[in-house]
Image (cartoon, rainbow, N blue to C red; front, top):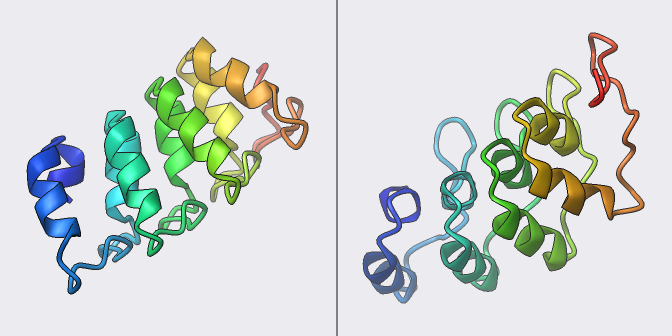
Length: 137
């Protein structure tokens, strides 16, 4: 977690070169290093982790949030774009509260991520959460 979160590329590279290191191994809350790299906007680390092949970019944590929701909640448009280009990411997946990636990005006012998400046909801009709030609300 520390290497992905703190952007220690050299340390991360050394660890990822070891066969016994599982880059997709979750912590107790089911978050992997990919979550932390997406949250902190470390696009290079995100790309390296995705290339490892052990990482599921659409795997949710205990709250059903994905690395894409973390990127969207922090205005990490570059990371959001990288994750969406990977092809295995569901851009309209809701968490335990019914919040989608678009809901997270609009709640924080992150226009760059909102624009990227709205370019995707599978994103429903009027999808309500469990409280009947839509991204526009």
